[in-house]
Length: 105
Image (cartoon, rainbow, N blue to C red; front, side):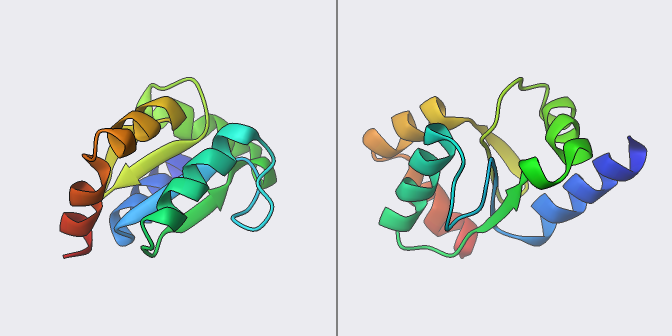
């Protein structure tokens, strides 16, 4: 578990935007993951994705890392932002884009 935590920490700290999702950017395996991908594509910004389905240790590890029970999980500038509902809400209120722009510098 320590290795998994370290791996997650290194991933979220080495990329401005990281989405832990079910499936891939090209083939999301759940509607919530797809919704989060769509939002970041609409913002037209670069982002990393991590497929939790391909690694059970990461799937459970990221939930433990954030103390958040569900996937997708979104990190901006190393900080856990939330899941699909929170990201949708931030996007709708116009608060997500400034966060993303700031993170990308």
